Amino acid sequence: MTSSTALLTDRYELTMLGAALRDGTAARPSVFELFARRLSGGRRFGVVAGTGRLLSLLRDFRFGDDELRFLRDNDVVDAETLTYLENYRFAGSIHGYREGELYFPGSPILTVEGSFADAVVLETLALSVLNHDSAVATAASRMSIAAGERPLAEMGSRRAAEHSAVAAARAAYIAGFGATSNLEAGRRWGIPTMGTAAHSWTLLHDTEEDAFRAQIDSLGTGTTLLVDTYDIREGVNTAIRVAGTGLGGVRLDSGDLPTVAAAVRTQLDELGATGTKITVTSDLDEYAIAALAASPVDFYGVGTSVVTGSGYPTAGMVYKLVARQDATGSWVPVAKASADKGSKGGRKAAFRTLSSGVATAETIVVSDGFEALGTAAEHPDSRPLQVVLVDAGEIDESYEGTAGTASAREHHLRVREELPVRALALSKSDPAIPTVFVDQE
Image (cartoon, rainbow, N blue to C red; front, side):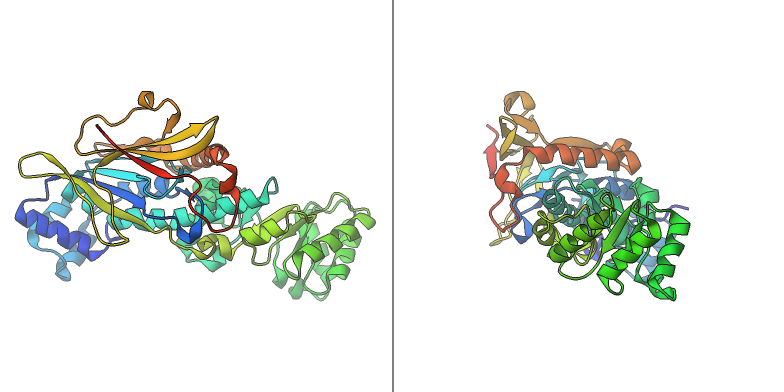
């Protein structure tokens, strides 16, 4: 039985809906936009993630008997609003950036068009998904860049809520991680899974050697042995004595990793285990990964930092009304004017301006009304950024599920190549490219 997602929202979405039904503005055609005013943490770019998940959740955004009963019993809305919600189906359209795309301040990541009633109730759901997933993906992409050609595995399930852990594994995979420890993420999204043993496995046995032998008997010599439960040097000696020089790998989860990794590599080579790989874990983030660039490390496992956005667990995106029809049927751009929280009204089309394949600007064409916005033909040195995700209530299924996740990962790795060199630095700075707004003439 499918669970409704309709109550994954804030109460004021429904109280606004009720008031709009009462004063006759609920059916007024409207345009909402999801965007970020700035990049969190002084990052130089952001990564869009969560779109495929949002589309699947939108399909289940239905008010069934249980949801309606809760709203009625708690006096959330009146009888007229309950009747409206009983038949609610999103009938509008959504276009936006492809999942895995890069974004910058002011990028119109999602544009939701429909009646006010259609679109206003989606605010909380859209923001809760994209703010979380994009924060994780942005951190993961920075880690992937720092790791270079070395593989990364996401191992943060124990540092996140159970459902957030699955979403975080997906976002990290889209942004360049190659595997996850989370089995539900593997089942649901087709992400490769990995994992062997924790320190408790070694502590369970009378000796470290007993633990290693049992693991190899179960998983074969290609497994990775955790060698730092006791003494690392002795652990490496025991691992090779038990498994032989064909041991797949050893894992280091403590100590001064650059120093320890160098010493372990020398020891393994001296023992003849020149093909045995070294995996490091232990509270890694993008800065620690970058610091290990010159160390003899083969794989990275990242936990807490990636699932919490490496210190910035939300992308800071907002969902604002940017255009609506007035009482005469004319389109009116609207925008919030508060200090430091302003927005730019009007419907928008977005293009990534390129020079010799390198991004130079985020070009946003703005219209007061609904006339045709800029086209790719009018911007020959640019790449259009928006695609149709929902058309008159019909969801494009190609962006969902395992296939949508794989496509988002492929898209991200491709468009990341467009970044200018300055975007790859980890230090805080201005966005790598400027956002340029162009008013439609």
